[in-house]
Length: 94
Image (tube, rainbow, N blue to C red; front, top):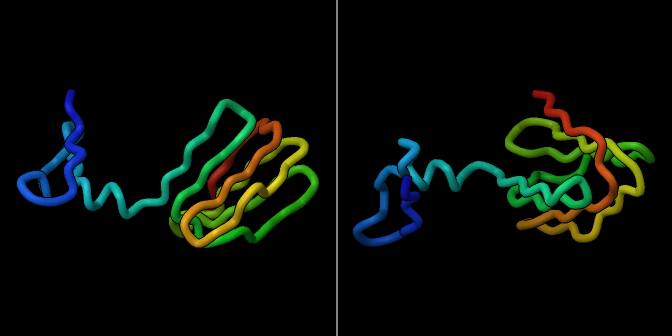
């Protein structure tokens, strides 16, 4: 399966091998988990909870909670949020 990675020109608006138009796919927040030690979130609306055992991040109109130990906010910006720690679980609430 080949994923269409073009953004302009002949590839603009074409569907990926998954049947999803690339522009629609790119409009969703992206969450990258690196093992259970870091999370990189692109497109979050901010952090709304920060407790000793979890952190809550608003993504795509939902609340994503990362539970674990030694949770730290490494960077927080309009484009990207990076969180580290030892994560035990992940949940989404609408």
